[in-house]
Length: 205
Image (cartoon, rainbow, N blue to C red; front, side, top):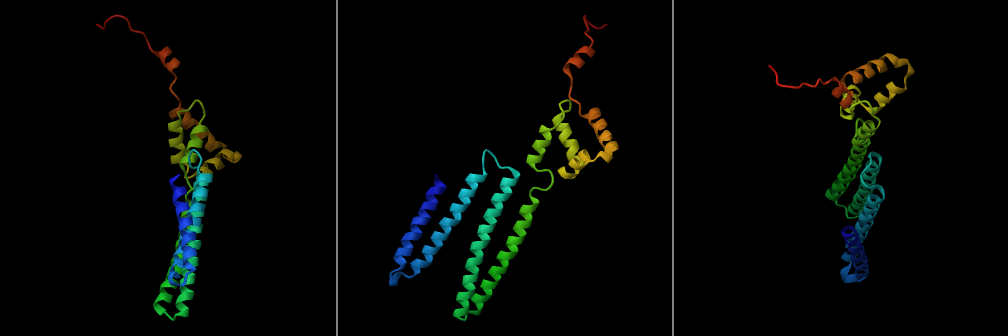
């Protein structure tokens, strides 16, 4: 509710400032009106993406998609303002303003590329969602914690683990892995332990 009130406030403020900006003594109102309207659209799109992509919890793909939307919108707005700043400074022959505008544009482009690369790397390796899937797929006779710990330490990423499982030519490696898991990660069998436990009656000598 609070984000919606904030977005509505910015939208209404932008419209009112644009209306007041039509009056000559308050021409600056048009500029601030644009800022408020763009801000309302920006936060509105982000909030809409958040509500659509975030369900009970973030999935790896949905979180990456949401961050890409935020990054794209931020870079787009930043580029629009930096380029408009450059054009405005050229008309007024402001060299310092022109340099600032160019630097701002380059910083936006570099930041966008860097952010895109970092977001692309988010889902590499053993993410929480992939670990939970590994735990779910754990054989019933194995301890899930031990199984997950072994697989994570043995395989750099899920792709390497899946490649082993699907490669029919690596039967030896599969057998070695199965032997290790059965030797170290079997669940405790209470019935078997009970059968092996000897009942002692009386006091020891």
